[in-house]
Structures are given as C-alpha cells and as structure tokens.
Image 1 (cartoon, rainbow, N blue to C red):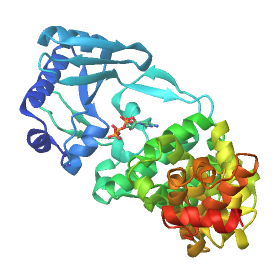
Image 2: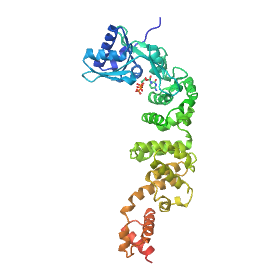
Image 3: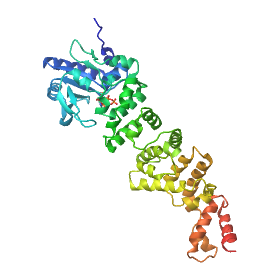
Length: 422
Ligand code: CTP
C-alpha cells in the first residue's frame, strides 16, 4: 500500500500556533457538517518547500460560502463575501484571515476568456489549476489532518524542481500562465519540463487574444520578482516574446542596451518613475534597427512617450557624425531634447560607441547646470545692447561652457569681449 504523505509536521512548525488551531477547528466543523475541507494551492506548495506562507486558501467540497458563515459564527469572527469570485474571507478577532471557496471546475468556452464555473469535487478543482506544484491539497479533517491529496504528482515535481502543467490546453485557456510560469521558475529556481515548454510553443495563437492592458499588468507583476533581462531571455527562448509584444526583438544588442539602462544610477535610485521605467524597458525591444522609429513607437503609449521616441530618433539620425564630437557640438542638435530621451540615447549607443555614450551623459549633467552660468545680464554688463542677437550669443556661451572653454566668471566676460565685441 502506498504510504500517504502528510505535511502535518510542516504545518506545526511553520504556521503560527493560533492559525494551526484555527485550521483544526475548520476540519472539525466541516466534519460535523458532512463536508470536506482542504488547504490548497500556494500555501501547500510553500509548506512542502519549508517556506512560511500565511495566505491560506481553503476549499470545501460543499458550499464554501455557507461554510465560511457557519465558521465565522462559531468562532465569533467576521465574514466578507466576494460573490463574483465564489469566495468568502473570515477574519478572527485577533486578525487571522482565512479564504474559503467552493471546490469547482472551470470550462473555457474560448481561449484566453474568463471561464464558466461549476461545483465539483477536489480532484477537479485541482485539475483546473496552472502547475502541478500548485495543484496539491492537504486535508483538514480530524484524523487525516495534513494528509496530501496529490493526484498529479506535484510533490515529486517539487522535489525535482520541475514546473509542469497539468494538461495540453492549460496555456491555451489562460496564456497569462506562461508569465506565471517564468515567475515561478525565477522565484523558486525551478525549470519547466520539455512537455510544458512544448505546450507553450503551441499556444502562440491564443496569446494574441489577450488584451494589451492585461499583458502589461502581468508583465509588470513579473518584473517585480524577476529581472527584465531574464524575463525577455526566457520569453524569447520559449518562442513567445513576439506574441506577447508584437514586433519585439531580443538580441545581444537589445540585451546590452537594457543591461546598461538597468545599471544606470538614476534607474537604480528610482529617479525615473515606474511608468518611464516600463516604457524604457519595452523600448529596448524595439531598437534593433536604431534608425527606424516606426518600430520603436510601438513601445510608446502616451503623447509624451511618443515625443521621447521622436527625440531619440532625431538624434540618432545624425549618428555617426561630427555633432557627436563634443558636448558643445552636440548642443546644436540636443538643446531641446527631453532629458530622458538623452538618457536613453546614451544607452542605445553604449554597445556600439562607449565614448559617445559617455559624452551624452556628460552633456546631460552639464546642461542641467547651464542656467546658473550665463544670462542676458552678462551681455548687458559687457555693453551689448539687448536685441535678437542675444539668443545667438547665449547659445555660443553655452557651447563654450559645455566644452570647458569657459571655466569661471572671468572667462565668461573674457569670452564675450574677444568673440562678440571685437
Ligand atoms: N491559478 C491558476 N491560473 C492562474 C492564476 C492562478 O491556475 N492564471 C491558481 C494556482 O493554482 C494558484 C491559485 O490559483 O495556486 C491561487 O493563485 P495566486 O494566489 O495567484 O497564486 P499562489 O499560487 O498563491 O502564488 P503566490 O504565492 O504568488 O500568491
């Protein structure tokens, strides 16, 4: 007879004592109501791996919402129903929360849509889930407390650090699971098995049924736990990068640009907003041919971002060329360029020309400081009468400052005398 596996010891060790006792009471009440109660999903997976997790999902074979109400009543807690999700959260007086739901099965009438749901037993409830490691339940019944229900060999997969889907249509039904899969690989150091990878490759058609907004939300979530470089590499290996982000190209060049961007001190210290961060990360996938702005505009969502893309490409149009020789020369084409467009242009050029990349960064910093250096008053003081030529003179002064030909106040006056008054 096969030995039954249990996580009772892990529950005792990793769950706070009050939570453990509460789960025992769930089992006792379920038993007296002739229902079966289980903890399921992420918490079971984590307990098996020895990771504490207090996000506890409980599934009832029976009406989970009714059960939650009876349980709250019995322990003197409050209950909040979330009808649309068929769940209810019970909170104890001391603040412990448990989520209850009815075991159910899901039918997908068309790929990537929301499923139709109906009640069923625990096995079917496990079968509708994404990966075997998330498809394990543990009984809460007295006498079986902690016993694993593992119809799909999730335990063995966890031991082998293997990420495996339950059936061939899993990704077709819900392509966001591909992104979840990458997240789990990164988070636990697991690896998808070959079959799972093959199913992903076959699901490209349904990825395009996802809305752009949904893809962006899921990718953002993914980036919060995995580096964008890893994510793009993996999506590209799996042959689905272009399905999630149409037109995107991942190459050693885009990787170098992105890596340089992520190492930038202002990115590291979060001087760029989340929105810009996201925009630049995706922009890296559209600069393969850095002379073609049409592709890059795909990364831009807002008017402001479209302007940044245009700014970047109007600079790149001049590359290579003498405008890139010194900050002063560069000022001719860059004086109206957005600061972030400059930052990104320096990243785009970094893999092919580190000197120019550094010059652009130098220019960015110096340009921020220019207004403290010269103004119309300096020209007036030198005896030049105000007029349209001021603009020109000031621009020349700025160029001289950028190129270090002017280093202090005295130099400013000197420069005016030798260049504008003689
Ligand atoms: N699930 C799924 N398909 C999805 C999202 C979720 O099958 N697209 C299932 C998984 O089996 C998961 C459960 O729903 O275990 C709960 O999902 P969620 O709370 O998002 O994930 P957890 O596994 O709890 O992981 P995390 O620790 O990241 O919250």
